[in-house]
Length: 217
Image (cartoon, rainbow, N blue to C red; front, side):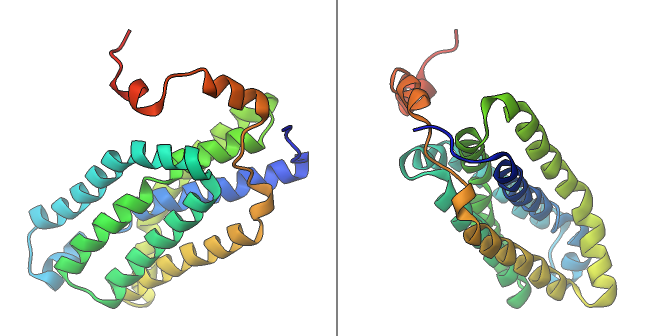
């Protein structure tokens, strides 16, 4: 199979995938700016709040490789959509049902959802974007993630100035849901099947588990 995505569609592909990456990093830094408020709201210390962020990171780290194998089996498009929906729902739930234990539980869910972006996004970009533009696509994708980190703290603080922290999280979660709908509506430009030449190359490599367990050279 050859790449059938045209240059304008390439831009749309990179834009949609990068928007998902933006939100993944955006969601990472939504909770830390709220620590002073959550400390009083939940009656816990900064250690307990830090634990919630640690749980998020540990779950993301542990599930990256398994999700990568899943992407190889069923494609990145479905994984990206479900991950974005799941993470959006997690932050909506924190806002709707505010408690420390809900925060902790939803950080597990959000951490799992956050693990989808790199495996799914890179698979989609690799299948959709020509090799001659791959470096450009990857750099835009990475820049979008860093922009999400930069924008998140000021966004949540700004929203709180007009409402409260629960409403702020709900609105941020809804944003992810809307992006999911946009990605679903444009799913045709998100290829997740590799061209035949790349499939043949992949078949000659070690299997996923053997690759992970093999010693470094």
